[in-house]
Length: 515
Image 1 (cartoon, rainbow, N blue to C red):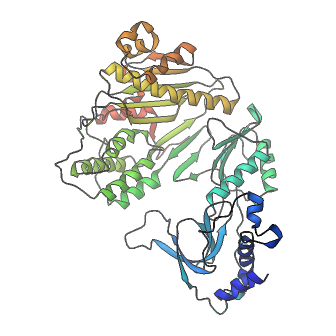
Image 2: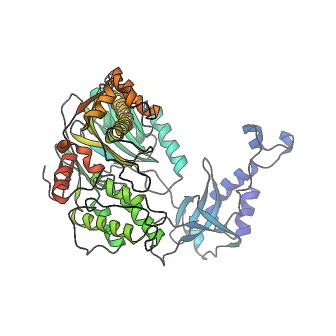
Image 3: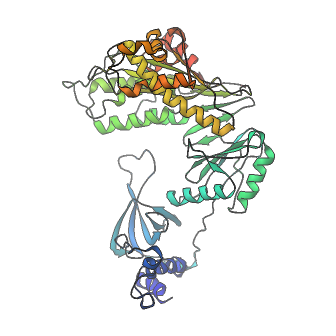
């Protein structure tokens, strides 16, 4: 093609980029008017609208792609020089070539220098453009979790769409309650697939079913077996005979090292009991950017550390204008992390009959600035902790029972979602979820309409829990405060009580944890 030849010669690019030049030439020709279509473009004739051209750049020009490497230091480069090869179809991203590492890359965060071009080596024509294959792995052992992962960076939107379409063509159904989960088959033959862009986690009871899935996927993609899932998105996974352990020890060490706390003295609690945090308008300001960085790192750690949810949540409320008071609290959290690096969650095999239950708790007006309360919830699949949250309530409560009532309503919404999700994954009829609350007055408000007079000032949306109780979707029961597993999600506890509640919640030291 004449246009492709002109693209290469005009930029002095090696002949090995002929394929990229042809690709970009076709892209341009589809957006240029032609007499055969009455001066319309092929794109317009096909799509029914005029094409957008503002995103087009000079083929072969230098483009600086954002460096997405985590935990960059102050003097590290924020971008890398590359060569623009055109537009990645199917998503709003650009195709780039990294001459220094001989790699093709797709990125949206790019700055262009259209009046400059790359200086190519004399022997560049002898090099081959690297091929990029989608590599996935499938485990062949029964009742185990496996990881399927693409090897090279790709366009997220296009890759995710491709993976999802492939699953649908293989008779997988997308879950209504969780769009990142796909299912196929029922009971013993069921296979579950979790999708994150083009990385897949697969589990199932049937070895034969997993092997069949493997063969079907191999007809579409080039694949290799990556074995059992052991590390995924910063979470370490240890699969034992009767249970699975999750922790983020390596990530925790990285946080401590990044913020110069690797050699700090450990402490027994992430926040001192009865700590009174507030906006501290008269306090000494600190670097807000650095404060937000450490909070962001700690928040990602909460995927396996629910015992940190309350303290990190409290510190997160003051990211706008942090002071030395708030910095002291964050240092306390990091010191606690130092002594609990190997803590995490354990998931054990339960009985065939599925049971979902949860705990709901609340403090009263713990937020000194707005006098709002903090809700805490924890839900279990059989005896394994699967969902938790610690969050400031949206409305000011006038009493402890009212705060507990609102916290229970929020927990009910989560309970219904879990109930529907489990029913969809297992194919079994949804069963009532038991919710444990340690306030008898709040339970009376949920169960007995006679008490409407004393709660009619509460926002209507919070009365949703009454309907759920009446329909039998939720069963509310009383639990003593000493056995309230969500207690650690609503307040700072002293060391001894924290250790007891932490174990009751389901957080264990996994450093030396034999099966």
